[in-house]
Length: 112
Length: 111
Image (tube, rainbow over the protein chains, first blue to last red):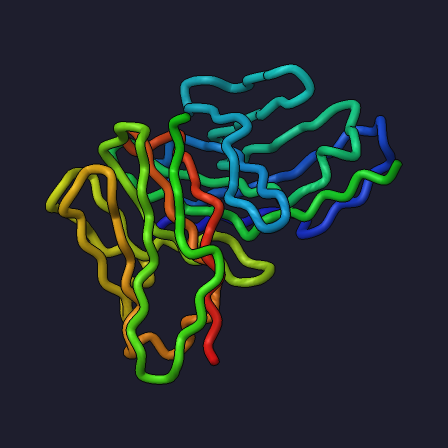
């Protein structure tokens, strides 16, 4: 079955710097890759997603890139702010599967 | 306001006891899900339901049971067969299998 590996497990950056989180998936049939942000004591919230027919997607300070050949995708956050501090999860699934497989999470700390 | 509501926020289970976690959504979503989250780990799928009166096992269904009698509701029962139930439980819903919308979770602990 699908396996998603996520790195790093923790990331500390200075406010205003960029942050990059990387994920690798195992099943070449996967074609949907969302990213979720989870704040302490809350449920995850979808922040951006990408399908395999697109190489890059951007939404303000957040972007996701996908390399299908290498089977990895990354989240890029530019101009980080303290409110970006949270745990970020990547995930992968394939058409009609309803089974989203999550990475183990990255705890991002943005230092003021 | 449309959303997904989980209750209770905190729940305690005694040895040999079954407990039920509630999940209700008013987003008119067809699909609903239960995930388990352990400290420092990702989310693992327990059960999911694509439509009323139908549900499928996820990756860690042993010791859990669900029902889907109404579109809005997808309760999860943690049975006494689940030997390590302490975790944060998350319910989610979606139209189709993408863009899951999560509730705020229930923390289950064993007394």
